[in-house]
Image (cartoon, rainbow, N blue to C red; front, side):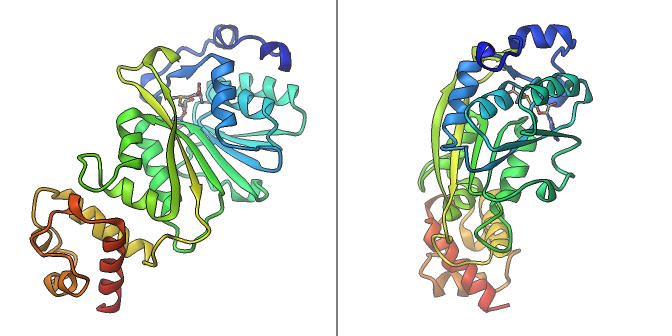
Length: 281
Ligand code: SAM
């Protein structure tokens, strides 16, 4: 693809701009532009959307998104060393790439974007999970984005798509599956990255549903599920004591045995519990 966009190969970009990977910023770069184009394609048709990209680094995924036809990419990057490399990409795609230097956890990107908006990112694990939870739990639904295309450690990706009864099932599964259609779309071995991390990764595609699968207040559901799975081996009547003193009544009201463990409780039942808790406030 370096032929298509006229830009140098990413290895050269990294050498020219001396972008040695910093562990503290979770920097494992994707240098294969065929792969970044494939990730960009998994986000669907980009031509009519603005894309919010978090953590572009030297710009592998950014180039993929632009080459695959994104109307505009807004990229937020914390590491100022990457800005000159990103400026070269902006010059190759006039008017289509805007870069903000900053921490994605603090910057509000909305005034720079026009709907429909898709989000794409290959982020360090902790930042990625925190942003995902924020994107999934706004008070009002549908959210400002139509889809999320996100790279995670394979184990985290499995937690997002997990079903009840499995070890991976927990808060991430509930929050993601409540309001989106979530699928693992690409598996990546450690060698896909430079430097290679210790573990495998996966791209998860989450498409926002027009409305949540079941009604519930996002804040109450999120808090209840967090408490339930924080002590996942405990029976719910004990794990959820801190959520409401009369938790046993609420569990009974929605037909969840008080001796059940969180792992066995369906999304639908957790939503019913959140509604009962809201009504009893
Ligand atoms: N997207 C590039 C790629 O696929 O090669 C880089 C991926 S690298 C795993 C993660 C990138 O996120 C790095 O460029 C890092 O500097 C950036 N980053 C880390 N924390 C960030 C934050 N809080 N806000 C914005 N960018 C961040």
